[in-house]
Image (cartoon, rainbow, N blue to C red; front, side, top):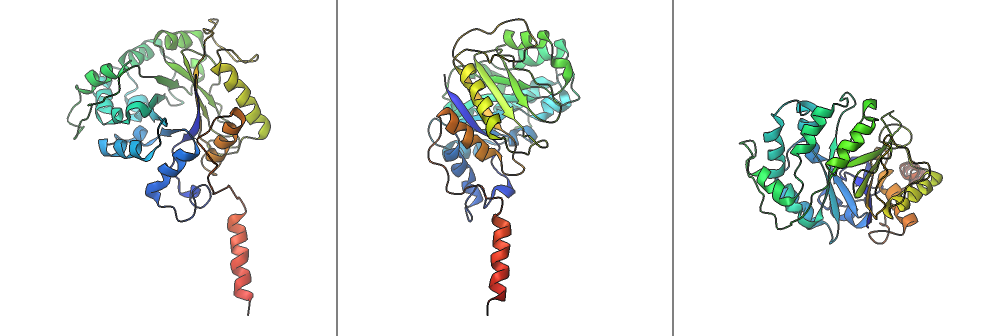
Length: 317
């Protein structure tokens, strides 16, 4: 059982000078962030195929025992939507792009479906059946890539199981049949907290729990208050030791197996520079962490104070 607390992405301009120290080179932002939290979600893979060079550089920039979650391509989840067999080459391309070069730092794959994607058991069964369960499965799949991958790479040394988590945003998924599909394919439901009205339920469907906390004011903004973080910490402790929160929200009658579980929790309230600091606050509550708090603390008044100092300097004779 391991608890991993982290952030969704790391390259955001508003973070510079607030979370990241002033003057820190952009090329070193991942290095800095990975010493503040112990897991980060790679988002760029959602928008375009990344390269082996990028995956290798991300691996090299992060410390031992660091873990990445990798977001699956929106071309698959938002465009093709697994309506037919055309998804096969696209998913092969993803696994041939170099993602396996993350080696032992490779954590769960995140597959996020859009709000206008309703539950369809046949389509979801097709999707889950395509996902490789082990590194060897992923290598075999990657070898079926097409010409869109200019520099295919699948010479991974890591062996073992791969983990997959599914995030949904349509209310029709709030049924036991969806949870049972995830259990059958050993995939995790993403417990997704948001003010956007997306479905929220807490079904544990495999041996790890995957959480995404999107903010408290608007989508992707708003800090989590102290009582909210206390509540999340209690839930994470319960899930990690194989228990269930007393008020857990279920859609299935199947009780999860009582066994220790890994927990991955990502803060996605990045727009107002809340995510890294909320992650650190939750880590402190749980007694987990990547080391000392970074030197740059959040300071919402810093720009205002700096402007006052400049104005005062101009008035000084």
